[in-house]
Length: 137
Image 1 (cartoon, rainbow, N blue to C red):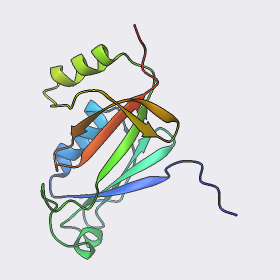
Image 2: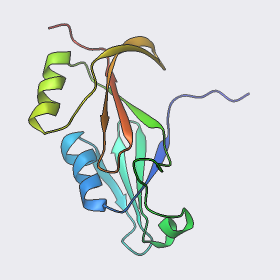
Image 3: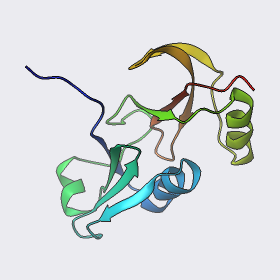
Image 4: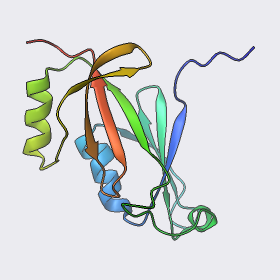
């Protein structure tokens, strides 16, 4: 019997690798796990116990998947990242200071039940849901 423990990885295709790496590393705090180089085109980022794989569309791997993602032609609906506890105010202030537009906080259902979350978008227009056992302070 199969039992799912969590998300292992997701794969995002991009035509703007520098902007994507800045978003996921500098803004969201992922760390570089592995970079296979521009020819193969795979960059793997550590996101807690999961990976976010970013594939350059002009690389060997990227050409297999088609053209560059656009706002209407993304290859992903959204990904959800679970954060360590943080208040809605602190998270909102951080995102605003970085110039990142965000939705309002809403109660949504996730892997650990209902809780508040917010939506943002990465440089390629992929929707990223941020959720946490948010501090009330």
